[in-house]
Image (cartoon, helix red, strand yellow):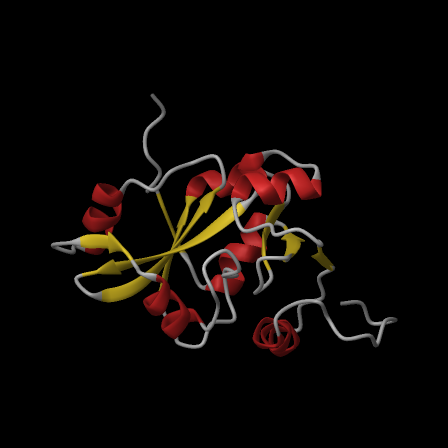
Length: 165
């Protein structure tokens, strides 16, 4: 999405609208093959898997929460539970993800969701100058400095990645 280009954005319409509302101008890249997983996205972009930001929806005591983590990391559900003070945290099913965010699994962006959801961002994403995230479809991504991404998503910075083995 550039000012000089009036062509429609390849981003999901809801995400493109969120970018406009935030006054954010990013280049959304579309790939012919899916970039549904962090590895697929990294291969298509030509970056490290850790430079991909996964947007994962969990249910904390039944309430959806979005967790942003780098593509090389796994979320430690126990840490998420402790961070939220929840009794139980589980991965949300596909229906809950779509109802909460407005997007399908594999295309969930870090912001521009259908509902206001609490967002946790693992500090590890700040280890990079630029990170890539889904732009609302399994075929689209955008790049952004991680501090901006955290700010636009309204995330709380936390440590929720599984410890390195």
